[in-house]
Length: 302
Image 1 (cartoon, rainbow, N blue to C red):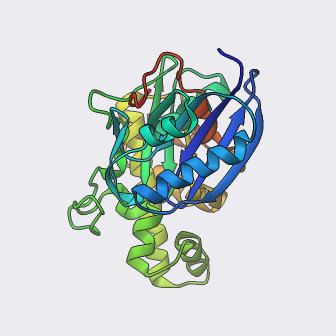
Image 2: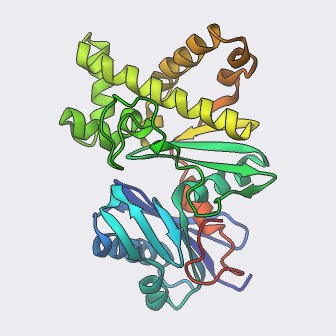
């Protein structure tokens, strides 16, 4: 690796976070800012975040994790960013004269978790504005043949359920995605937390939201377990910041299903899930660790 810092940027529906890593892979700078929807706003936020963490340092590579499908340096169908298609790599590479690697944000985070935990088989379930998963098999992140591996948020579990941003009904994301819940309830950026608070106070409508969150998250966990059988399933994202308040109803939902099925019970799913520790910029770290040395600008998921 050439001298200089490796910069990673994690673009989320609410915030954009950047880190700079030194040659030893340690975080030496970190910056977070609000995400501005739309191609111009997202691109401007990425550039500003990189400037904030790099200062006068030479940048050896830049990795960017972004929600949506990534191909040829462009992101497609990033509905939670208000982007149908945009070139994010080109403007960043032109501004910093560095090799830029663009990939799906959840797969970038999956790489970071695998490196942190030194584990070669895991699934990362991101519960945030949207819902998606990353899968690490034999130490490699699987992007699929068309870059959509892990987009389980758009798996419909109830044809009569709420409408999802993708156009289907009853998607996992429609039940547990923060953006969908905020839109459905008229809540703000803390709609999910507010729903949990009101449910604790006995509000029937809020209890229905919490039940839907547990149902959606449990369905995602079962899907990951049955599809790839990971050694561990790590849950992160903004909704995971609820901690045990989230984990308790999700485990309850998993156990209810397991009580009715010896097969599901044999999977011991509750023992295989864990929450990502708060405060670790794992998505930005994973993006910085992308193999920019061998990747052309805009190569898709790792």
